[in-house]
Image 1 (cartoon, rainbow, N blue to C red):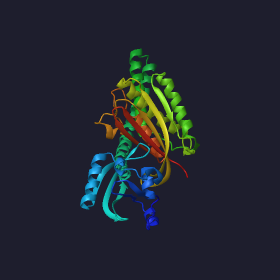
Image 2 (cartoon, rainbow, N blue to C red; image 1 turned 90 degrees about the vertical axis):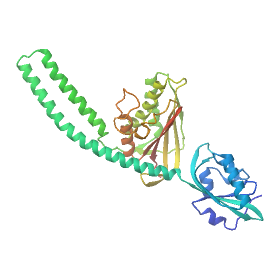
Image 3 (cartoon, rainbow, N blue to C red; image 1 turned 60 degrees about the vertical axis):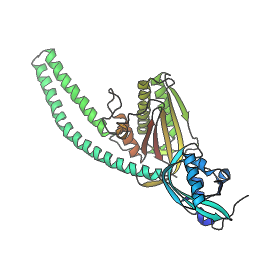
Image 4 (cartoon, helix red, strand yellow; image 1 turned 180 degrees about the vertical axis):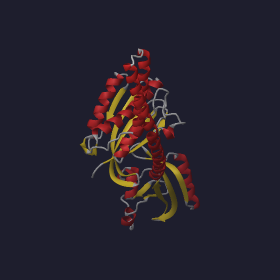
Length: 358
């Protein structure tokens, strides 16, 4: 039977997700915000046991039964909510006992907090990265100036040695100095990231990802399974094709190297695209963004460096320069996007968010 509430238009206008459950803990009503939070319509939620939505089913059930029995409201914080699409969300929620249609019932108000936590974490990380980037720029300036002088002096010395018919070994020492100076200057340039601003043009993100996948398949020679899970409804984006290819390639290569180190049977990389509605990046709320996930089933990122993986010279293996993810992040930031990373053993996911012009 369809439930009619006198204040339903008011409840549907709220940003807070609201559920009404009966004394058997079955959902009798969900407002529009609850449907949006749970990613499912009320028609599918109706008569569902509300406890099945929570990560700790028995604990949620026990608390709600006690609330009904003693007529006492309560609040829970940082609880996991299981969404209809299989994902989860972190919420705060309050439970209030009421009488509705002569039946003991509960009003459950839920606020999603993982987005706020993510925004706070993003702002803190952005502040640290800005400080790091400014420090690197200052160091780069101080390093490149003397390097230019050393290179020029070495070239003059090499020419004088050639004119003076010096031995080949002495000339080779000068060549080594010039070569090493060039290598250090290139390293400093890589630390600074791409020097050019993105040349924005309308592009299909899947064409960019297909190009990256082709390069990966050539490098892995079929040793790593590469799966694609694309959302064909994603519209074209504004972006710099070359910079985006480099960013996604660096992230995918990072996954490939992690799989080689883990020596896991059945190594696999998944490239997945989805649309996210109402997403905040750098304090600016976007109506829609494109999310690209690069997922591998390697051993995961070392906990000691997990919070610093986008910093320059931070690498999970001794052979790495620790610049690939830094360069990727710089390119994505210049597209007004965002990179996040979630990693546990057996599942590491880099999520890249790019604005969609609606």
